[in-house]
Picture 1 (cartoon, rainbow, N blue to C red):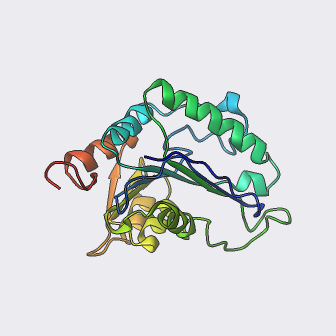
Picture 2 (cartoon, helix red, strand yellow; picture 1 turned 120 degrees about the horizontal axis):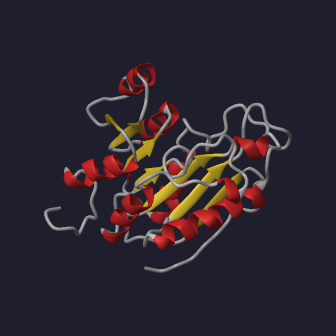
Length: 223
């Protein structure tokens, strides 16, 4: 696969870095970051504060081994609020890449949206298309990587993650470690084209998707 990277610099509130271009028309796994891949420390803007979630790196490596593109889609309102900046985000992502690499894992793309209704100008935006629960980041990844959204899944720890997947026309979404109320809210998004499930963590969610053959490279055996 070709390797290339691009960070959107002409929009102060958006980040899009495509590291690897998958084969055309493949299913992908979309992941939220905080609370899914790394611990949610509230506005993670310092690399020394990064803590990996148990089993997350090996779960991503499992997808990598099957040539399933893994795409990080993360809201970053801490930038809009002035708690850190894109340099801080970049530094955190660099450490995350090292942690993943130590487990033989990588992200194929990273997309982030800093816009927020309570942000400082120019990052104040009540309802930016890229901010989850809107599907803009997923659509941007689709357009740049030629992903088959109808066979793709999203995993997150917030109802907004699942809602973004439903709005994008994904096959399904998995909500991690949620209480009864958020789980009911997420399950209300399910229909005959969009499945909603819950799991304890990323490793369990990925094991269920791959073991159940609901997420696979198109050329994988049995597909």
